[in-house]
Amino acid sequence: MHLNSLYLHYPFCRHLCNYCDFYKNVPKNDDEVTKFEALLGQMIVRQKSLMSELGYQWGDLETIYIGGGTPSLWGRRGAGYIRNFLLNEKVSITSNCEFTLEVNPGSWTSEGLEDWKKSGVNRFSLGIQSLDSRFIKLLDRVHNIDDVYATLEKFKEMDANFSVDFMLGLPQSETLNRDVIKELETILTYNPSHISLYILTTKDHYVHQSTIPSDEWIEKEYLAVSEYLQKNGFEHYEVSNFAKKGMASKHNLRYWQMKSVGALGPSATGYLSEKNYRYKWKVSTADFVPEVLEKKDVVLETLYMNLRISDGLSLTFFNDKEKDEQLAVIAESWINRGLGEIRGRRIILNSRGFLILDFLMDEIFSKINF
Ligand SMILES: C[S@@+](CC[C@H](N)C(=O)[O-])C[C@H]1O[C@@H](n2cnc3c(N)ncnc32)[C@H](O)[C@@H]1O
Ligand code: SF4
Image (cartoon, rainbow, N blue to C red):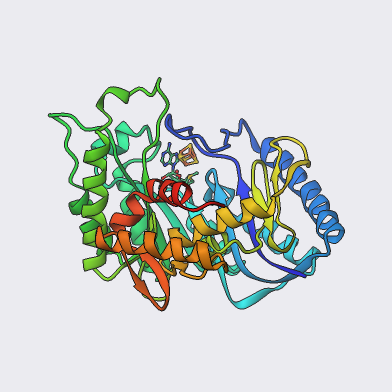
């Protein structure tokens, strides 16, 4: 079996945003990056032996995603590291491989970006979050609005294919109101091919907890943004993701389609689908926590993932007359409630359905006996 996708986690940022729960650190000096690269080297060896134990080998890579943290900070050094990895491991990338690098405003250099391009990067994912300087500040981001525009201009100059991370549900008050549509209007003038929405999730002690808007308010914001993006040529192809035609993230679709993705780097998670085998790397040793999913869990996860994307869920998903009939009844009630449609014998949720997906899953659990 061949493994054709790779996620790599780069765990460093210039500054730690106070709402972020991802694994990351601010490196004290270059030695920390050297240590990380050495750890990565050990993980590469361990990953290869895991793959051979389970009957896998690297195939030509069809998707690569370097996420973080802030991997654009890895710069020319990172681009070189990846080239060496591919060379040493004798791994090729396909001619139409989707190779994404996450970029933060104010955390890149022109030389770095150009070098990443030489290493095969053909898609950037830019963490804008908000285009309003008041909210950039409120979000405790280290960059300012000029850094955002400088990055957008750089992408324009490079004629780059890029996605934008954009946050919803930000704290609001009488004196601090956000106009998300106006922000998106400006972002779209730079022609991104893809937008990912993130609804801010926080812990109780979050500094702006008292001004986080209500669930109803956030739902309205999400639906307004979804409507706006669809009117402007984006397909709402996954709960939180929008893409121009043909520009959906191939890498992320592999997760939602429960396909295999190899992973490297602290806290990165990989999945070897034919073996129902998930593994999560520890943060400071080249060791991981393995998990073999039970058949029942794979079925549940697949069902949930199918509903998350606009390919939708087959009405014969269960391959069992009684259960599929129950599913058809549920699907019809969703359509009557304006939450989706049937196309090609599949139930496909719309934005309103995506919004309440967890509730719809509960409905399936309560009506179908697994
Ligand atoms: C791990 S970050 C990496 C991207 C990049 N470092 C950045 O900050 O733009 C990926 C995305 O997760 C989202 N994120 C991080 N913490 C979040 C939170 N508490 N709630 C919602 N989204 C969050 C941000 O939108 C971010 O773009
Ligand atoms: S820059 Fe991104 S990864 Fe780093 S702390 Fe901020 S949100 Fe998290």
